[in-house]
Amino acid sequence: MPAAEPAPAPPAGPASVPVPRQLPPTMRDFTGREKELDEIAGILKRADRAAVPIVHVHGPPGVGKTSLAVLAAHRVADAFPDGQLFIPGTREDGTAREPEETVHELLRTLGVAQEAIPHTLSDGAALFRSILAGKRMLVLIDDAQDSEQILPLLPGASGCVAVVTSRRQNIHLPGAHLFELQPFDMDESLHLLRKIIGCARVGGEQRAAESIAHACEGIPLTLRIIGDRLATRVTWSLSYAADMLTPSSTLVTQVGRDPHLRATVAGSYATLDPELQRAFRYLALAGPHDFSEWTACVLLRRVGAEHLVEALRDRSLLQDAGSSPQGRPRYRMLNLFRNYALDLLAEDPEYPAALRHVLTLWAELAELARSRLPAGTYGADDRPPAPPSPSGDPVVRAIAALVRRDPGGWLDREWPLLMEAVDLGIGGGLPDHAVRLAARLHPHLARHHPQQARELWRRFASVPDQLIRQEALFHSARLWTSRDADAFRPSA
Image (cartoon, rainbow, N blue to C red; front, side):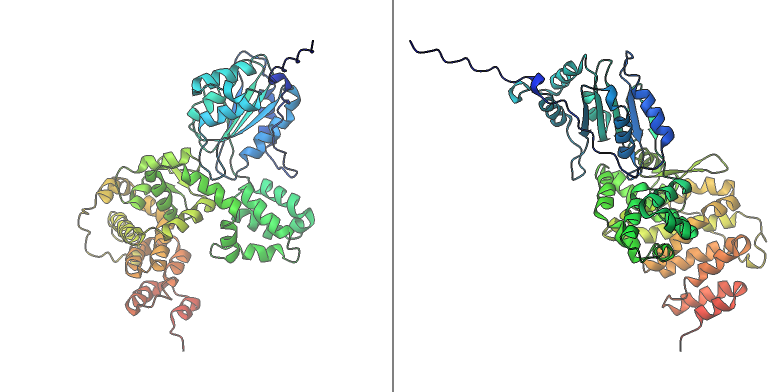
């Protein structure tokens, strides 16, 4: 009688699956964040408590959220012998991954056969939590978009921990420990540069190194891109590189178009709805200067746009920049984002007409502020035109009360924005609108910021329209130096 065929082996279960060790490698030259590292590691070591410890690291793109989270996870990895899971929240094109897709991938990683994976998200998430129960595992969810994406991926029992990185601040994760990463200060920026290009080069040209760090605005990703370029160009002096980091330089253009850097910003932009995308583009017109939430009404040319500023702040696309004397928050946009937004504006068909309207609004607000000051405030430069007629523009009417409350203070806070608008008007082919705004700004600058007043009018020296050049000459005559006269003197 023939021997019976051996029974087939049972299907391999989770026990035969390798323990997941999915953490990416740490960065060799990771810099700073020691306080945050120590605090996060301390929280993660408390995994035996009843509630699962959750750490949420948030901040702007390029600030080092992933690097910090990965290093912290490696520091405590030995405490989680059953594995460490690394879960990207976005695809390579920057779009968010669906939670169902992510849960199915995790279950396969943990040894669940394809045919045994539940069809619904809730059942898949429940099975994921069941597998993790009784184990000591660390779950790192990187670049998460919202709580709907995160919650199905969180462990449900003690012994496990979760670390989440996100560009958004307002993700609701009950009981999470929040860590907001800010750009590096000067010391941290220089420390990173030393690690990349060496102490000798930084120490030999300290002031130039500080100029480079300042141009990078403390964003580690930008510092690394510039540092890596310097490391491969040993003949470049840091002074030469610093001179090349002016806003219009070729080097800045090349850095701004670095694929990694551009993809980082594009990923954030892609997550915005159309209204917020438009706000992001037009708030770039504030330049590198700080502004209040009402500025969005001017730059977007609509009443009730203030909430968009906070929405962009929640997504780390605007930074806090202190507050006004009245306690109103101020914001600014990092050059990393502003340059990307300006590139998008250059392709926006509504931009020329929008810029014309923005310049008109600024001119009306500046004239309103000037008209509310006592006669003679600006001495010889106080030559007001006819009193302004009430504006029919709803944006001006909405902001007028702020201007009237403290017209001199309003001008002193906002003149950098107005000068930025003048530059945009000249560069955008609207010198007539630009000179109208400059004439309303001139008295305040002439009295309180004479150097800026001289620079304001020198910007019109290259305008081809002779009448506008003559108006610039008229306003700047009392401020002239020989350098100003040379700028306006017709070439031979």
